[in-house]
Structures are given as structure tokens and as C-alpha cells.
Length: 392
Image 1 (spheres, rainbow, N blue to C red):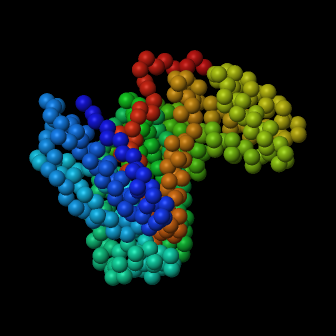
Image 2: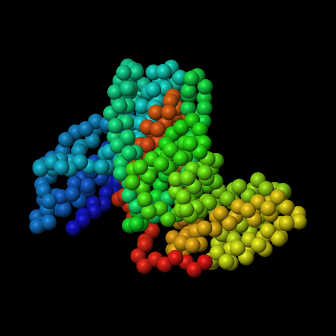
């Protein structure tokens, strides 16, 4: 038995927003989060307030105030209590982990004297002017313990594996360098998505990829039937070494972007993009290969470099045709991680340059951990019942 409590912003609150503008936002956040926490308690108890039912799992026990530091200032929430304990609302905690990680990163920059005026202002608003290196170290240690536990948790059977890399700027020995962020996501046999792990290192060479992939195996990753990724430097050799004969699907989105470097004239780009989409959208592999042959012949005379590149590289994006038809659209690109990268960029843009690798790892781990929790409670991503491989 599940209860859902709908909350509509009362007209008087909307009037206050209209009259007070942004000054009223903290109060609105307090009201909305309090309502969400009450709804969570009702779901947990299996009953609405004062309702008598045989399915009730316990009894409400009032509220306890909790003040939380946010970028809008301190907000005091009313946290619902349950008489027998064992309940704590997630509405209040959601987003707090990455907020703490972001605050710590900014604080590290502040105490190390490398912060900008903007960072200094944010830190003083969130933490007060008395923030010290020892305070930052203690807070980081407490947060890092939970993040490390998540990064090292046991894994199991993952049918489809997605790999991607991005870069963040990190300060090291007085220099600003690009650090590679390696991210792995996957889909299990139940069709649920998981964020499996990440690694941060100053370089995206084969040894970094190999170490990262081996760490996933060491944590119990098994059963992989397909790997989807871009053609990252270093990944190809590492993937072959660690995953042997597991089929590889080169991300079709990145493939289409790569093709633009071989188009001899700007006015040809739309036509080439349409031809590549025709290949990728073919009903099966034989038809895709037939389209590819036609397209290669089409460009052989007046765009020979493009034709040669397409003949060699496009087949790497056709592996997906060997898998169930209803899975193919979600397997042919690394888009699940690309969407995460947009969210990561939104958070890291505030920092711009990380003070060290640990700060970068902490913030991105916190963001990914929150998304992983969302995926676990969200809808099924793929279904596996009665699946038969496509005949291609």
C-alpha cells in the first residue's frame, strides 16, 4: 500500500514570491522540502495522518528541527520523526552530498590562497570567515569515507557497459594541468542502470584505462556482453587486454562528429551527416553495410579522405545490430554518460580549477553517487524478458 501526498503551492505563497522575489526563495524551499518529508513518512508508515489501517508500519512522533547550510543561507527544516526509529527522509539529504563536496572544494581553494574573489565570497557566505585548513581536512575526511565506500562497493553481472572520459583542470606543483576523468556505467540483467565507478588521473593513457577496468573486475564486474564507448586514446588497448573478446560498439554520436574532420567543404557537412544517419538507421546490418558501400562510392572521387575514413571507421558503429532490436537505440551511443557529463560540468564550472586530484575526485564522486541512487529507485531502463538477438 503506497500513499502519495500531492503538494500544491498555495496562492498566498505565490503572492509572496511575486512581492518579495528571490528573497522568499529560502522560505519556499523550506515549505516544499517539509511537505516532501511528510509524504515520505506517510509512505514509510503505510498510512496517512490519523488514519487507522491494518497495514500501518508504525506511528508518527512529531518533528525535530534541523538547520542546513545552503547557498541561499541557513534554512531550518522540520524533520518528521517515527516513534520506533529507523526512518530518515531522503528529501532533505538529496543533493546535500554534492553540495558539501562543492563547498569543501571551494574551501580548499580558499585556505590554499588560490581562490578568486568569487570563491572567497561564496566560502564566507557558506562557512563563515573563520574557515581553516584543519576544519576543511576534518570535513573532507568525513565525506571521503562514504564516497570511498561507494566507489569500492561490490559489483555483479552487468550486461551492457558504457565507458567515457572527460577532462577537468587541476593545479599541481604550481602548474595547471588537464586530468582525465574516467567513468563507467552499466545495465544489469534486471534492466536497471548503475554508475559503476570513476577514476581521476593526470593523463588518459592506456595504463590509466587498464588500471580502472581491472579495478571494476576486481570488484566483481562480470557478464559483460557489449561495451559502448568513443575511440578514446589508450582505451582500445586496455579494453582488449581486460575484456578480451567482448564486442565493442563505437559511439555513433561521436563517430558522426569525427567524420566532420574529413569533410573537404563546409557546405557538404549536412549531406554527409544525413548519409551517415541513413547507415546507422538501417533496419539491419546487411542493409547498413549496403548503404555504407553506396556512400563510400559516392565520395570516393571528390572526397577520397572521407570515403577512406568512412570505410574503415563506420563499421565500428554497427556492432549493435547483433543485439536485441528493442535495445539497439539505447546501446549505440554513450549518451547515458554524456548526460551525466553535462551535470558534472554544471557543478565543476563553479570551481574552474581544482586545487588537487582529491578535490576533483570528491566532487564528481558525490554527483555520480546521487545519480546512481536516482537510477536505483527510478524506472527500468531496458527489459530482457524473451529477448532474441536480431538476425543481422
